[in-house]
Image 1 (cartoon, rainbow, N blue to C red):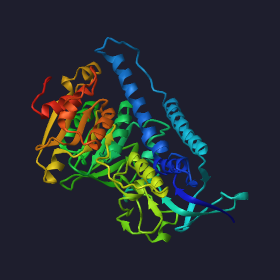
Image 2: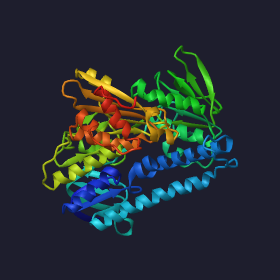
Image 3: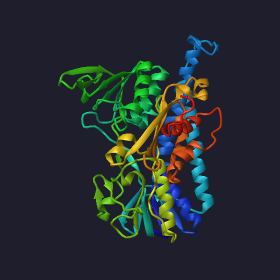
Image 4: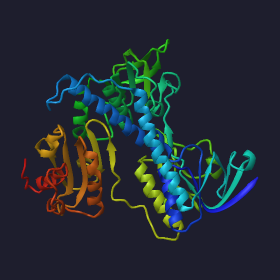
Length: 467
């Protein structure tokens, strides 16, 4: 068995892993990255990027059908058709371009990439099946081991994946559009994909155990999303639980809050009940690491309970977001290179690419109150924003939360078309310790959605100009 030594060994080539490898290489740290599947991990291959591509296809098709029916813009078209196979090919082309770009960056930076399934022998040794000469195993020895193995979809006991029961992975590459889709779970994954399928023409029903869609967010923020779902004709079964498939597999058994049960017909069932850390199949148990539930427990430097073994991204628990993993990977690389770093972000943005979109950065009014902070909040409606109206996107709002005593900004929330692009400004204001006066006094370009950010700050100060 051939052996190779490296200073840093990264197990997992997703956003966290490849960013860590790139930054380490920049800093002169000899680095090897092991990936069993495609570089880019869930995000680039079966998550963030392909889902947004499919969402764009669906929205474009919805708009085209609107033009064919009755366009307020004066645009008239013939009734459009959707070439689903071509849409999937276009989506796959974007994925291939981005993953190829990651491979090129790693090669240019001098990172050794080993393709194969890594298995942890101990905290200093990983064996990779079939990566050596003539298909033999390859043994990698390292000074630092970085675990970046991501997460996998949660499988429900009564609805194991297979046949007509699928995860988000299969939903992103449909061979045909189902007539009736049942989505289990009204979190961001279920709603994003459910909305896309509905816009492409499927009948969509959503089953959610809680009484609200996007239950992790406050009711005011999700109200525009709920209105959008109803406008699209999606059927919601809130406060209900799934009990499995009917005997012939043609429907989902759903239990209501009153313990009644009914059958919900389904040609395809998308289980979107969340994700869990990927802790199985690569020998993690051999390290005997301290765990935090299903996740690997880490400190404020992403160190595990074993010296020189690090963990980042979804493997270390919530929030399971690609940009969190990237930031953690960069930090770990710098720590290994001898820099002084600590995980202390002011806030981590969260975005739901629903229709309309939802953005949350920092504290909501409820979170501030629960933390015992005397806070003020104010919202500016997009119906009063000129750019939003020109985009036919007047539904929604931008909301700011700040301390009452010194006006330090604590959080931002927004719901509306295109508001995802405001996330950077939201996060930056928190990281820089901005106050309401700072935001209100910054000249925002007109006409843009960003003006709603300034107007929300002005309204919180009692100086609203356009509402």
